[in-house]
Length: 134
Image (tube, rainbow, N blue to C red):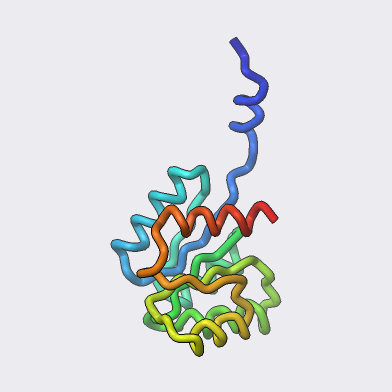
């Protein structure tokens, strides 16, 4: 039996998420959770690598840590928005939790700011889905 809806769902292009995170364990857990929720995932372990992949790959959304080696997330985001004119939605996902950190991220072009300790993986996936469904 051919199920047209199933065939149509299989043929849809998966939304591609770039995770820029230097904490390998979290990176792998996020990647697995997103893949299990039907997303394609590209990873980068620092801001420089993330900037390259964001510019080269056709990504639909970026999950971005702030504190990373080589280039921090806010610097990467500034480069994306101001120099490369990339308008891909960005969710900052960080351990930093002050109002100033959130304001700084939003000021340079983040679409949302989530504190890692305050949000489950399920909530992160829900936020990604919500932003991509707009």
